[in-house]
Length: 407
Image 1 (cartoon, rainbow, N blue to C red):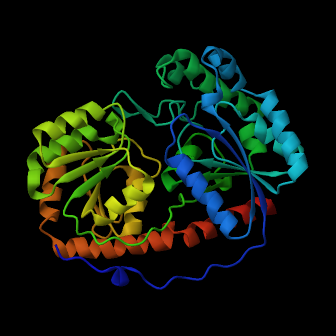
Image 2: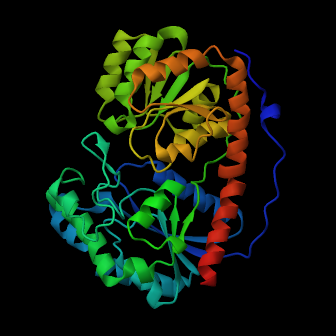
Image 3: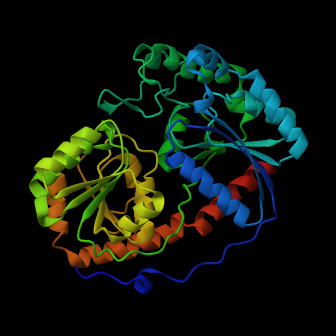
């Protein structure tokens, strides 16, 4: 398979304007299982420090919640006075100009925004999922897209359908946390700016009643690990192995594709056994399990194409951008958020969500189209540099901070 060389894929870098150093307090409630949101946050902090800004970290971790204290944790998620006071004391000591929050649920709670505003500190909340408008955080329920709770101040539908961790009590905790913040005016008065990870997320927040004039869009930061060569002769899937990621469709498609373009799968999740079973009956599928990010990027760089069959409203396709950084194009399910990320025929191709036959047809056709693959490799790398590189996302972040501090 003929491919473009890295020097052809990389245009000259663009200059980035310098900014006065800022002191920023990053507050974060870590998830039980590290994911893309944690990676993106860490990349932001590294980027800001590299540019000369002072970054202060304050973290809590869901693993700190005792198993017999879930009820207490649920109540504190509505308004945690202890965290309010601790953050207030830290902000008095460190005097940050901005409080930047990535995830506040459940331990930090919306109370931390009130603590910052009492001290006159600007506040920014990154929105990388849909929890503000959907307690399940996914806009996906029972195998289909669901927007029942969008626009509800108190998401009773989510409680009724136990959308968060299949628990009535935990779903109620999320719904009450959001509802109480609405009642107190936290979202309206104590958060100066929201950073939506994509235009689709911004649109959904506006539909949910959040102020559009205070919602900016900034892509997640993805480290540049250099262009790949695309000579591996395989397709690749990277992500959680769960139903909404389109795993069933992916495996069915490869029953028809076979050895024309072998498939490698990286990830873990509830459908892991299904993937392992597929490797036993289809030798063209290889399961690699969970891999460190450095290895994922290496494998991505050698892939002919990344397959992104996700059927839910994925807020941001992190693996897509990781692919772009390596010059690897993508074949993705045609959902509205992905239309903002993929330029059809330029950086990738679309197939009908859940349609394994359509996916198979596109992959089989693409495997014979070296010129199209090379064309898309060039444009994928170019899109990464212009939209998702450290320089691009740093410029986006600084514009947002400037807007926040000027209001």
